[in-house]
Length: 246
Length: 246
Image (cartoon, rainbow over all chains, first blue to last red; front, top):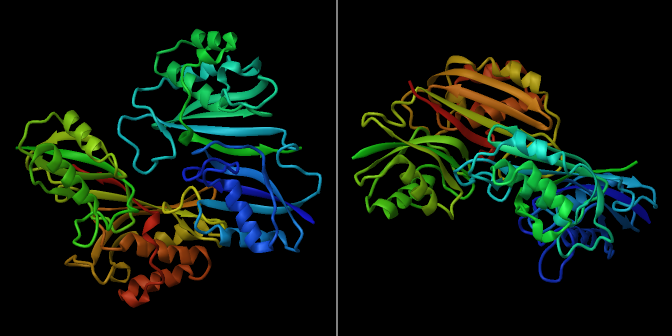
């Protein structure tokens, strides 16, 4: 048995999310079926993060165990060949130790959220960003974002379906910048709660539009109460960017 | 009657091209049908350039004449509402003089061609760029590109279906640069021949892969012979970027 680490790019649009679901297609299932077709083996693919329906990945990390002998290069090529009809690409495939685990060995996760700040609908970026027509004050957003950095009870920014034992998390970085008509939010932490990035971005968007002040964001965090959430940003602007390992 | 200048973004993927075609959908037809639905008027939309099937636009310029009274803002909003199901967005709408013509008043056109230089298939950028697995020497491409700048007979780089009276054109700028794993080619001229940008990019890609030298490109240009074309780049990497007016 050899364990392989995969780096995966995908367009989350057509999927119910990363994780296998009974009701529709998932990224995990697509890769597992490709692996089955190649190796004849029923295997599980473990990802560093479980992205929601519609959320994309520039470089999801995952691992897979295969009994049959493959070089990493051949396995990556064969998976890509089988995945040709899907918007999923294996960017990198390498052999790792058998105790390396995409999820449990991961010491840091980075997400990016793309907002296109313009009035006109999205044509080329449809399904790839959140459009906000009203002008965003990205500096006010970045200032407010710093309130969320550090160790906090993120209950306000957590989905009701979150399975994490604790809402206490340490947010290492939350930064907002503008590139032309795009406003980009970068978030980094060891791990995130379910919907945490989208919930933080939703509230920052309220700040950017002047509907919330910095203090409103602080009060929502302090309250540790999901009903105080201002807005949950839609999934299509969110990208899993990087999984970090020691 | 009022003439409006439109700035249009579109994903060329689902269309036979800009220009109305008997056999399938076009960007022009979609906008004309939207205008008809709003105004009740059969109008023609004139574009600065006629992009091929699969070619995109970040900012195509066009004009349209409407009898019914509209403010530019309302017309733009109404067109976007009607075009909601299409990957076409009106970025800007403004009133212009009646002798302003999107095609004939245009004094410069700029295109960008996106190459993603990597082995893995495209997931997020599928249909939005040309993937070339072999490593490209973008500096060699940029050096060779300078041979094409200036006034030349571009017969080699012209489609057999080109309707232009003359193959003599002045290329104002052709520049190649790298941004991470993307290689971008920027082309500017008063006007281009049919397939000219894609043909130039195809040959530059041969130079970048070491299959052609700079001199081979020069000889192909000199020959003024379509059969000397090395390669025509696929449409999905091409973007109409800007139309210039006095």
